[in-house]
Amino acid sequence: MDSYITPNQMIDLLRLLERKGMTPEKFKKIIDSNLLEDFFELDTNSINEIDKDEFRRIMDIGPKEKKITINQRLTLTQMITAGDYNFVDPLFTKNISSFRFSAGVKKEEIVCEYMQFENKITPRDADKEIRAKNYRSTTIEEILTFGIAFPKEQTKGPIVTVGTSPRIDNIQKFPGLNMIQGRSLVLYNWFCSLDIRFRFLVVKRPLIVK
Image (cartoon, rainbow, N blue to C red; front, top):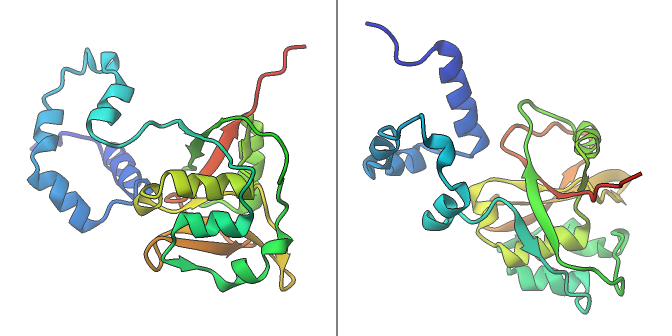
């Protein structure tokens, strides 16, 4: 019997499922909903004509580009409280003063996106890749504001930023949002490797016309 897809395509599919944080329970719900049956009936000749933003709106997925506005009147501690997390890393609150915070600096609305990588990557290499693609990593106040504005996002997979990495107890750290103990605000060690599930919260740099 001929295979419907190639082994490489199957590998790509499995990597996509891993990157999207798919679980057996979630995958079963998708299968049981019969949505995939409808999806596979799509005419591949016209698939590029689908309005992806409208599709995401209908499916209540949310836009890929997510707008946030930093409330300059909130301190980092107040931002954490407003995030209503189930768990906050004690090292975070204990060392809150270690983070650079742009309080009082005028900020306009910014548009955040995710950047993911095909293989495990270190924070240092991720930061290089982000810069090379003309993006910048979000700041501490930006990822905290994101957690307030889009609380459901971290339930889909871990979100991190390498744009702020203070030394705490002589170890360089960077913040992230995950589901370790419900909605959690945590610190990761700088000298680690992050797998393909991790989404780096970034902002597009403005083009400079010379």
